[in-house]
Length: 162
Length: 151
Image (cartoon, rainbow over all chains, first blue to last red; front, side):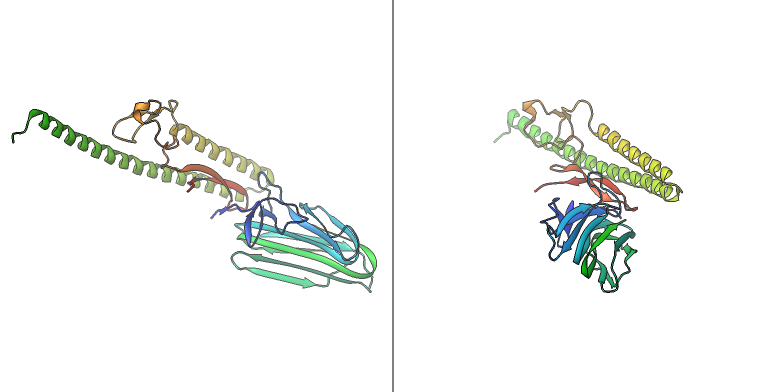
């Protein structure tokens, strides 16, 4: 059965919000599965965050395969988007950084749907990799993921969705 | 007191008016029912058309064919909808029937030009057709036409 469009931005508490400044808004784009709406390109709010390097945190809207970069010794990159889907679909979360044994990386993702389905995951990741996450069909779902490092030195870190 | 010919005339005229009003009401009810049946039939036909294309899209084994089928499906649905809208909106938009016992011309003040419009497309009073985006069965963006009404 078709799903009525929500958005264009929103979150689980408020699925019908106008497009907003990602730096200030608690909302993110509402996507049609992996596809673009006729008047809205697929997007996620990406935030690069560090505890003491300006101008972090910095948020922007990115699409598939747009790499977000940062330099940090204690921080990371996160993505969040909402979606509507009549069938399950996959999202790939890609990351890369250079850490030696003294570094402490972490990675996680979670989703929750308005129907109450949810799942989450956490691990200590390798220096680079890809996670494939299947998001369930939902009239409205919200997904987020992050990768972060803690290091004695400032390191480059990058991540993308595909 | 004897009934005068004038009284008899007005009495009969009133009865005749009531009879015509009753007939018009029955005719309008019948038209509305037929319109609802037509709408349901049209929507079912569109649904079948879309389902058959969706099946073909699923069976297509390359992206080019899938895109072509999607484009063809959307064009056919758009054409079917616009053809129906044209059929619902004849060239002479001033001519309006079925609202009361006699056909009337909306531009004629004597025929109640100030009355509410039915949108020109046989829609229920106060309702409008509105195109609303949806996610279709293949997670693709699409749209449907809905009857909407603002309070």
